[in-house]
Image (cartoon, rainbow, N blue to C red; front, side):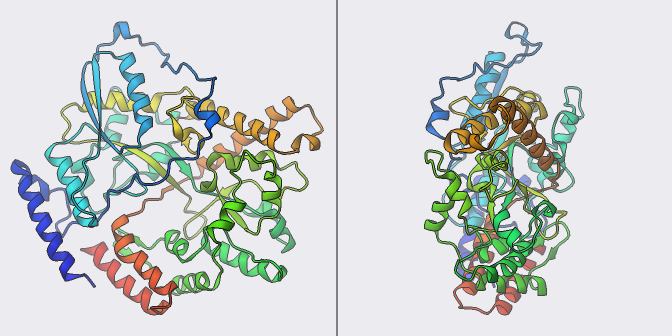
Length: 507
């Protein structure tokens, strides 16, 4: 049920925002479906920065990151000014802007923070952002798609369909990229934003626990929340003296987060189903790992010599990639260690194994109302085509936790990351005592195999994990809490949520 007071306040804010649009009044309505605008939240940059060690930030091996191709500043004909709206933590876009303006000195790039919203209300914040984009549009817009989506907007009126530019005179060859990421990023029949880099959703099975239960880990090709529940029920009775957890993050919220609750385009809602009832009931029965226990089991303490102990004594059936970013790929180098329990990564999926998702930290769009679309595309194309590793650039934080979309950039940058991770692994463990070939030969072999493994995982991706903050905060999270705290039965909670999401999806 909708709160009448909230609607009144929101309506007043909405009217004020429309009046503030001036000459844009008539255009404003065209950016939404004929019904009431959706709720949303633009507070998408509050996530902590990726874990980056001090040695990487202050590396003496800083590369001279120049864009080397057939162009030269002497022959650059590009000129003009570009404005980019980005969050206050978008350090990486500044790296690209410096590179581009060095190559094209007659181009001025202005990077501005997203305009601060006047309220914390999700709908009002969403309306404020879109109003700002309409009344004084930047040329490019950078946002975290994982927490900011335009699922109820008419995207073709806000943003340029990038396929038009991909296939144009100064286009790109999609074969040079993991083009499945483009397909996975499509909305409303077009491509309106491109992730500058992305995070695959991966999990690492605990071979030690699973093999006790008679499970051949090599046959596990993907993991869903249903799989986590099933393996938990299978393994727990075998360890009566230990508290086993499906994963450090498993809770009722994980059930809602990793289930396909609704589809805006089809108008379908999948909440009040027998399958969902069973998932939620299991989440209530399964113990939740405390943050203290999580921190004691994370494989991220690279300053400690007991990394092997952290891995070998884990009570988690699965650990997630997001716990340590690309440092998690140390698991690939530790497979030769006789005491190491975790296997290599497999995808986390939604529903069945066909839905392989990624998460986009930062997606770049070109505004439809930009007066400099051609120049904006030159900059975006430069970002997409940039092939050199930026791993050792101090202000490029994301290299340690995300994957580049450009294939050659992947080959260069992921290699650099894995090289550091390999030596970290060797230095922090006794792995070298269990190697039968020279260490350099082992390193070359292991990194080549890791690159192949990661590339194959990336090629499997076919969906983007996008979270609509407004329905999550206003509808889903409160329902999850009421069920978890016993204030509402599972059946009643899912029944109410089904009805509320149907109103949201179809309004």
